[in-house]
Every structure is written in C-alpha cells, then in structure tokens.
Image (tube, rainbow, N blue to C red; front, side, top):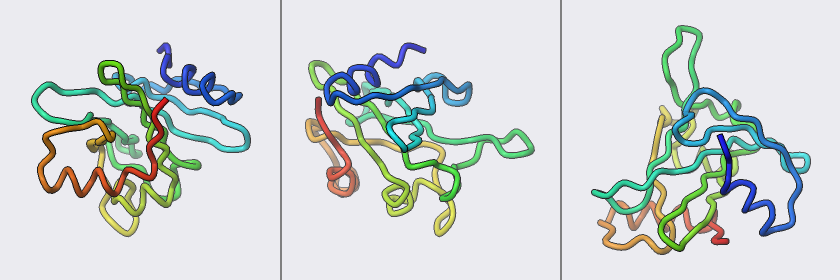
Length: 143
C-alpha cells in the first residue's frame, strides 16, 4: 500500500510519524499510524458514482474469523479517514469519542463495519446524509 494521502497529510502539516499496512480492509489502504504519542487506524474512503460522499470499511476479525465492528476500547486513539474527490483532498480525524458518538464502534451501540463520510464539498445530500455531514464536520480538515 502506498498511503499517498497519509504522507501528503503529514507533509502539509509538518507532522512526523510512521504507518504500517494491515491486511484487513486492504482495499481501503488500511493501516496503523503512529503520530507523536498517538496511535491511529488509517483508511482511505472510496467514492461511489451512485451516491454522494464516500464509503469506508472499518472492521476487525473476531476469534471465529468473522468481521465485526471495532469495540470502543480497541481503536487506539481513533481513525483517520482520507477522502479524495477530483481536486479536493481531506481527512476526517475521528477520535475514540467521535467514533462512539457516531455509533461506529461497538459498546453502547452495536457498531458498524462500514459507513459513509460526507466532506463539505458533497452535494445532493438527502436529509439523513445532511444530518450525518453535520455530525462529522468538526472532524474534517481539507488539505
């Protein structure tokens, strides 16, 4: 995996860190990054022609080998989701608390194995997508 967006993000903000690829979710440039004293899961979202926004898979395998949502306590410091659409490029920096609040990790909620992200440039959103975009906007940085 190249992690092009991750390295561009680090260069844009003069950050230092390392990243190692993981086999689960490999189609989404899945990795674990060390940035300073924090450990982040990393994914690159995929755009789909039929729906606005982008989709990202975020799951782990349980002891039986089944894909399950990450638990609240198993996400390190959070999840970085990179999005590239045309000339736009950005990152959602979801902390553990954000992932819990959005119902992505399991614990207080069943969690999700994948979800859509809606950068500010997303258009043609229905009411549910607009609500999700508003919930995600504080976590987004364009670069």
